[in-house]
Length: 86
Image (cartoon, helix red, strand yellow):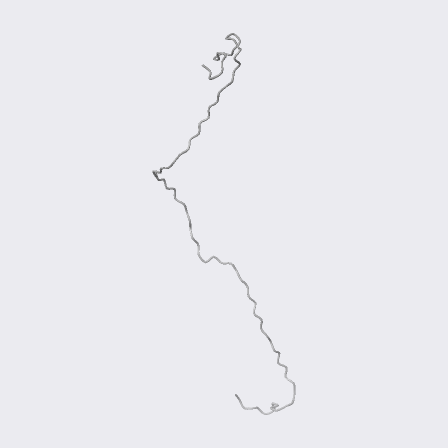
């Protein structure tokens, strides 16, 4: 606040332009590392005693041989009869 000096136009008609500005909000997201966690594995060996029913399968294989083969033509280890090799 000051007094008007001589020669200054105190109440003169005229146009004063005042630019009106607006603001806009611009929002962006950025990825940042907030914390870091270190994870690891440790090998552990333990012994446990368990019980339960176990099924078992057996397979018997019987070879068929020709009954009419004599001892001279039969391969070694076979006696010319059905059954296991002797």
